[in-house]
Every structure is written in structure tokens, then in C-alpha cells.
Image (cartoon, rainbow, N blue to C red):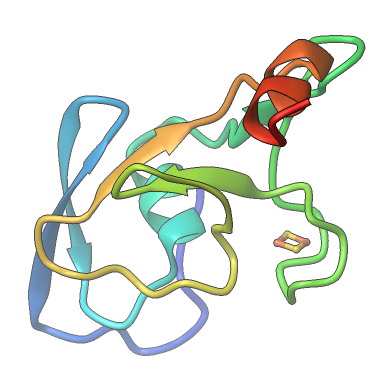
Length: 103
Ligand code: FES
């Protein structure tokens, strides 16, 4: 379904996407790892709960927010994969955001 338009590196990085081990060419983005794993959903919309995924792929729209190594709200389209990286789709609600902000 998805393929890279660039020549991919022969070096492979192993990451975990939502608990599933995924092998990704080095230098690819976290969003590429999600797409290659067959799990392109990055997060649920806070109010409607609808699936969201990368839209602009250049750091502008913030639709691609995921958790990377336990750190929430990371833009999947801007981060490159690293060995043993743990990537998790987010399900942040309005209540979750208030709790994280200490409100
Ligand atoms: S896809 Fe738009 S910021 Fe990542």
C-alpha cells in the first residue's frame, strides 16, 4: 500500500509499533514505520474519537502525534526511527490533557 519514493537504506532498524516488532530501513520516519507495519493510525481525535493519521508529512498539521519511547505528543513525520524505539498510537481525550497539564 505504501512505498518510499526515495532509495531506501540497506541498513535495517528494528522498532516496536503498538507492541508489534517492525523492521524499517534506517533513515525512515516514525510515520513510515507505522505505515509499513500496516497501522497508519497515529491517534484518536480528542473530541470525536475518530482515527487520525499523517496529513501534511512536514510538521505543520500535528495530525501525526504519537508516543515515542514513553514521550507523548511527538510528531511521527519529523522523527526518524532509531534502534529499539517504541512507538505507540495515542488516545488522548480532553480529560487526559487536563490531567497531564496538572489541572
Ligand atoms: S503529518 Fe502533519 S505534522 Fe506530521
